Amino acid sequence: MKFKAVLFDFDGVLVDTEWAIYDAWHRTFQENGQPLPLEVYTQCIGSDFNTWSPKTHLEELTGAAFDWHDLDHKRQQRIEQDLAGEGPMPGAVELLKTLTSLGIPRAVVSSSSHHWVDGWLDRLDLRQHFDEVVCRGDAPRIKPAPDLYLEAAKRFRLDPAECLVIEDSLNGVKAAIAAGMPVWAVPNRVTACLDFSLADAVLSDLSAVQSQFQ
Image (tube, rainbow, N blue to C red; front, side, top):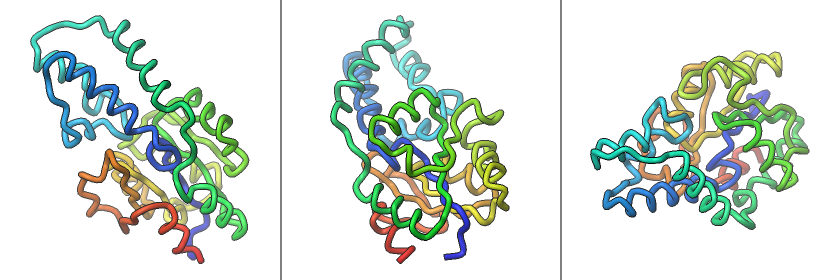
C-alpha cells in the first residue's frame, strides 16, 4: 500500500456511538410530537450544531422554546445507558494490529472532544494502537473544514496525500478531500443513507478495509 499513515474518525468508525446519540435525539423529537428522519439528522454527523442543529430544528418545528440544559442532561444519561458495555466496531482491533505490523502510523481524528474520545480509547484499551489523537480544540476548525486532518499530517510530518482517511460521515469525507487526502467511507447504520460518491472507495466494514492491506 502507498499510504504512509491511516487516520481514523472516531464516532461511528471505531465505536458504534452514533446510533445511541441519534436514538436519544429521536426520542426527544418523538416526545414533542415531531419526526427526526436519519436523512435530516445526518447533516450534523461528523461536525457540530453550527453545521445543522437538531435543537434549532425542533424549535422551528414546534414554535416552542426548550430548557436545553435539562434536556441535554437527560439525553446524555440515555446515551450513556445505551452505550454501557459497548465495544469496538467489529474488525477494528484486527485492522489496527495489521497496520501496526506493517509499520503504518495511526491516528484518531475527531470533531468530538478529547474528554469523549480519550475516555473511550482508555475504556476500551484502544489508546495503545494509536500514535496520535487529534480532537476538537487541536486545530482552529472542526470538520467539514480540513484543519483537524491537516494537523494530523503535520504531526506525522507527512504530505496530506500520503495519509489515508477512514470516515463514516459526509462531513468527514468533505474534510478529508479539502485536506487533499484520499478517503474511504465505511458507512454505519446511521450514515448508510448518505451518498458517499465523493469518497475514493466505499467499504462495507473495517474487515473489508483490512483486506485491502493484506
